[in-house]
Length: 306
Image (cartoon, rainbow, N blue to C red; front, side):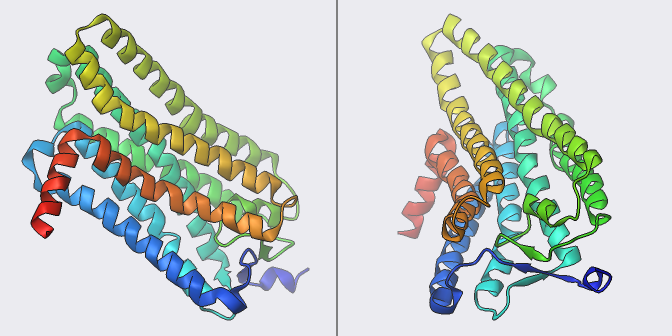
């Protein structure tokens, strides 16, 4: 055991058929990564360069898409290297760093969606107070909170994780996530409790807040004229679609980790790709198509390219 504790690398054992299909994997992963970069960066660029999009709602959308870019960049470059390597390994510190980025950025999305929900609530339910409440300082404070609160809480958890002894050095995955817990020699009640607190703070509470605000928006819209209902539908529907998609992916990722010992290696690989491919592409498509002002500028950009 003393010899094993000196091992500084963890083997990523979730890849299937790399000997035969390594270049196919590489082309698929590279194509998806380029699409994610292009789709998200294009919408962010449109928001930054057009003055009429410098409103809190669009700023939060840009922040969400930047979050998707960072999330993808924490995973895809390492995947590209791994599929062309003879051995798929990651250093012990880098594995925990990747785990930290994966979950801190993922959980930030719930807080960013909460900020969007609050902005929509003020805009529709208290339109006269919107310029006063959603000032520049308020938007900055919400963005800082959305990014640094998950990072702070995950820092505490990951720091405690690094102090646990490992009895296995083969991770059944293609990147580092909560499957790392299965490599520990024994479970920790402290880490379990902390994980539950983080889940309540950064998933359940934001989710309940979003549901509450959109319920209030629905009530106000139902009692108002058709113009208010149309505005609510146009601006709130994309956020709700992204929220539903994010919740499904959280459930999906949790089930994948819980059931990974009961399903085949190929099935685990496919499920893992679903988590890191679908959501970063879904967000820019939804906001690019469903948000009227963004779609107008996106259409204009396409016309210029043609």
